[in-house]
Image 1 (cartoon, rainbow, N blue to C red):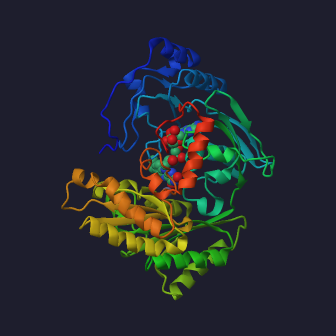
Image 2: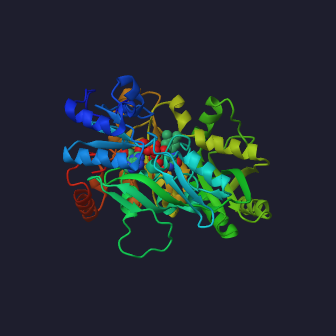
Image 3: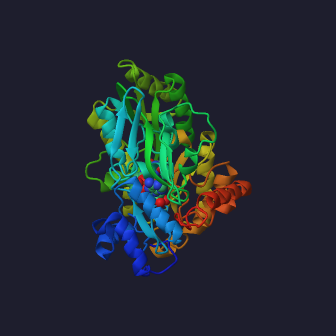
Length: 478
Ligand code: FAD
Ligand code: ZN
């Protein structure tokens, strides 16, 4: 399945211009060989493939600046790329743009445990940032299953969410300051460590979530938090999505802010994990329809286990929890998380799926799932749905599975039509068509149907102001 409309092509650029770009980074870091370029041109699910005259791998902010200055002067389009784990095609050069890879900008410039900040360059992987924070006795609280590959720059450019957003917020909440190279090559130095800075418009928020369309993030000051002293994890079967929402309420009420994660999983996905992942076992004795993975964390060393037991006991009494188990060790907690983390990946073994990363108000999740299930199965009879994800954030990864009786290609040809069916239900419940992954190219054409027209107008105005020549990731988002 390839969602891009255009056939594979070869990118062209005037040889003299190419030479000027190459001279900025040096030949070693300007990839023109197709084999060397290959990993930058296709995203991991192979939904999008691109082509480019050159992949530039600058090693300094000054080089990024020089590249953009030249690109702007010569109206040469550029696609920024971090770890290439984005899920909406935003990082792929679909129209022969130059790829600007940030992964050599990978210095952690400073960790300041007193101010609780870390200054990291865009190409630092999330995992390295978390490890650096841990070495200083702190937590960098962004957590994505793609942490080994995705980068700080990519996380901020997509305003990534993940499994700890319930307690700590999404990427936007983690950035205190940014360094950004603008389309004309100027460097916006906004690398402050301040929580409080009311000296005008908050410019950094423009670039966070802009998917590389307004500027290139080269570094960020990230907010660190204390490392929790106690963590408890439960794997619980619940009677329904409504029961899961009610249990979240119980957990929030009984623990005052200790709920770090509250993840929902439908049985069919859990079952696929047990079937296709040799390392995973069902933590409960028999199958149930719905599960939640609950993680509590606290600065207090004692009492958390009691709190989790209290939540589950009340849930049981009220008929919300059907069965549950609490991790007895770090290993067991990891095994519970493995089920959740593999949830998305193993689905390919049970057929093709059409995916959505939507959000609705938490209270509307049960009605959203019921209404979307009804609408989807009416549209594609025999299809099954597989909702899972960050229930605590109202963010459901709503996957529609290929019916056994339908050919994969025929099913996937319905991708955008199925999106429309689901998005109408999202609209009805006051939700968003993208809670995490962004718009990229995947949802670009449908965005105007769901975004307030005045908001879209302002977005176009900002794009014109910051990138008048349209060189930054053109054709993405807008
Ligand atoms: P890329 O994929 O390289 O780029 C993403 C976008 O950002 C592109 O538009 C690109 O042009 C732009 N960009 C990249 N770097 C910069 C920069 N320095 N300056 C300006 N623009 C830039 N996402 C979630 O939100 N939550 C999840 O739980 C989650 N789980 C995932 C699990 C898996 C297994 C995978 C594969 C992906 C998951 N994602 C998730 C999606 C993805 O990991 C995130 O979007 C991540 O933030 C992308 O980072 P990246 O460095 O790979 O960016
Ligand atoms: Zn997610």
